[in-house]
Image 1 (cartoon, rainbow, N blue to C red):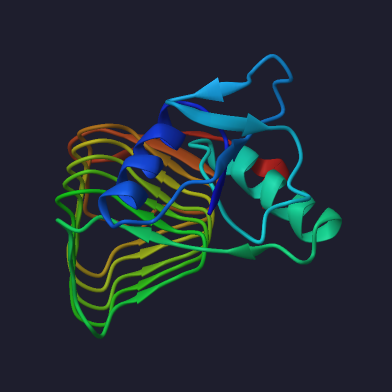
Image 2: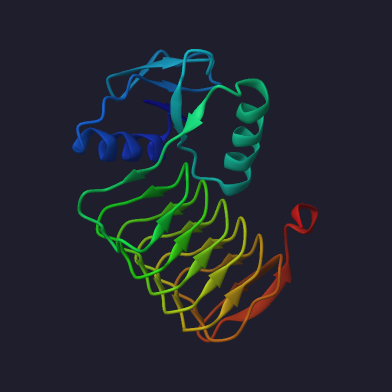
Length: 204
């Protein structure tokens, strides 16, 4: 198993894999000066990798790297990592390339997209749907039937009440309480959460 991205997020993913007895053969990173991180060798091409996780926190950059890997190294398969302390319903779906951190709860028939991050202590309730490249920050709570569009980032400690839809490529500020739908491409913050400004329009 290889991890693309030798940053702090990559170290967390390495810990998850190691805790489950999965050997991390190496990091892959574009920084040519890196030779070893966290006691693991760093390579600068994915040519040797048969299975990997893109372990980069930024949603847009993570998508760019996944797209580049698919084009340049079509033999590579994307794996997922779920911490052993997480509670994941048997009926939940976890997409390829997605990482689920420690202490999370993912309940019945939730569907987590590809290359997502579900961070430490987050709670995702029944029948929530997350698009690809979503990042749910630590200790956020998504009540039942919440939808989060592609590439959106939900800030730490945010609560989203049941049935709310968050659009694509949004940022929800830390500690927000979201009671109404948020359109695509908005920064929204506060308790109660309000639209602040348009962002990421080039990604829509």
